[in-house]
Length: 268
Image 1 (cartoon, rainbow, N blue to C red):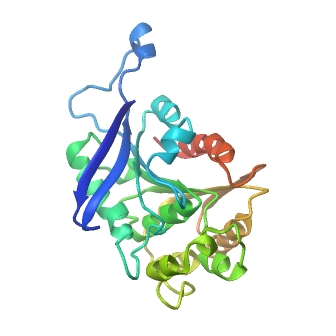
Image 2: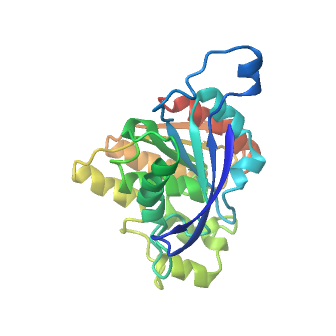
């Protein structure tokens, strides 16, 4: 893969932004084994996965802690890893609009400078923990852009995490001023578009085209109950969601193993 470290000014965020991109290229094995390749044919554009980090992370997390570069090379998928701070990939009440940045600005901007597919059916989003929540939040907001969304150990029921008092939960560990900046002074999530169950219900009632949804979580993960409740709501709405549970906790061993399940699930 070509490894591209990209810094640029984001008009949406109104500040400099940072991301890492992996673009499939001819590998040493391709060259040594004289494998035929389509990688440099004129006009070729790659299926694309936007891959979101979790809380307290940045665009380097997936690069440093997993083999996603190798896995994506085998599948022929470009991977875009933006930094999203601790903003849960939403439009902050008192801060930046990461929802529009991830869902609209990034695809439009990157397709101009990189050989990424313009097709909805070849544009995907995924993430871990806070990024799993963000992947569903963005894809449900921009279903015309993303055909597939996948969550690994996602915080898929934010109201439950807010009310649980679970000391391991991202939303509980964020400093209170940052939580208020993200979700508002009242920290109200239930019944808003930042409540994924509410948002999914609204999209179904509006007869919106929905992305294909995939979710996975470890059976020893503290965040598992929020996955179960979201899945139950999707089933009530007759929304197809593929849900897999495996032994594991909220850690990189799980995410490194199961990002491969996400890549295998994608139609690319």
